[in-house]
Length: 195
Image (tube, rainbow, N blue to C red):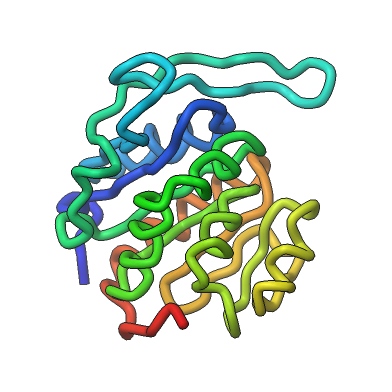
């Protein structure tokens, strides 16, 4: 068991993350007492910062800058209890092209640590090859991607399967954050191969 006030949580993102899907977990997990750090690729648009995306369809626009605490190349999985993967379309699509980011996801899952992905964030789980045989949810438009990778998709607010937490969209953020806190308090899950 891990007390949330002693937990270390990593949020991995790049430019184009869905603003609320970073801001809400970052704020709420810190309020709960966890130490939360933001990691981004070694090269970003502006060194040491990443920029969000907010709004929907024709009202969408660039969001706020967020300071980066760590480069992805510096991540030591054993230093953290959980990994959070915000969505948006741009962020996970760019991150899944970063071999180091995909490797981080795979290593978190293999070690039994909590991995929480929301919206399009499960694209990283697909790319890491860790969804086969697992129950997940995601933004509806990537349902087929999850299923083609061997995942069992369902349209639910939050789905948990052996330490992997998934949610559909920003409207699910309260349940998503609550489930992260609950899963961290349960401790590490049985190690399972990503194959």
